[in-house]
Image 1 (cartoon, rainbow, N blue to C red):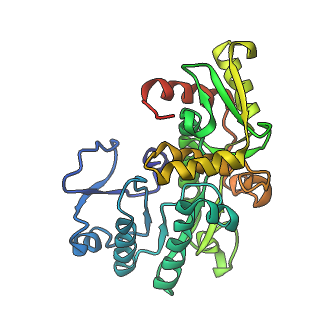
Image 2 (cartoon, rainbow, N blue to C red; image 1 turned 45 degrees about the vertical axis):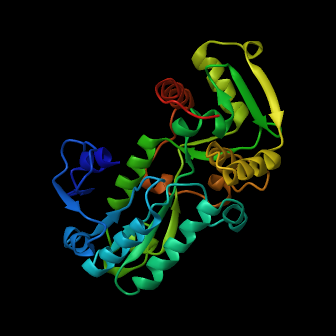
Image 3 (tube, rainbow, N blue to C red; image 1 turned 90 degrees about the vertical axis):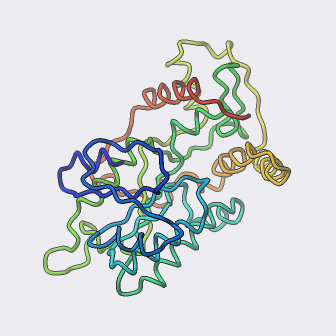
Length: 306
């Protein structure tokens, strides 16, 4: 994401890092500021004179950290916050009911809208799951590349919307490159203020598990008969994942989250149900096989639970 922002040449970027952070940052970032979540004044100071705060916290970060950043941004007068959304469609009530970690994001949006009234607004970017991450995890999309096995949910034909990580970066950069206000102060889709306190949707791949499998066969040069193919009920797999989580098996989280978007209620296909900004932003689809190749590479580099 940072590289996409820097590539535009339009932004002055500031990275916020914890005092004890070991993460290396991309070259080209204009400023780095250290913050201490236990000292809110460091957050406020770091966010002075910023127009946009983009929150990309790890899923394992304390939930309070996001709220601390939001409070500091509002106090510092930041105009727009892009909260830690980056997920399937959390405007879908049934999805949020069945996957509590998605429902949490609704509360974050409501908090910004209420606390930032007249001062700070959110723009929440819905991206779908990151394709090359989820396809790499056997517990998520059911593909185990080492064992050459795949589990199809129901018939494996439910279509869902995804983004690759590079696409997410391009989408953020393109969105924030829009003028803040339209000429004459009109509310128009071509300006940022039009999206204040709204969700926006972007995706670069819309595919079913069987589409993914066809891509895997092309990329690996294997044949369907080389693979062990099984089928499971999406609903039962989702519920089993929730039970596993309650029992302390955190691979259940991937099963619960990923499988729920493959229900036949089309909650996972927001390209169809909501539409996207990709045309307005000039964004193109990703190549499915290239994304699959990246997922296979990731599966070889990272050890995942099943």
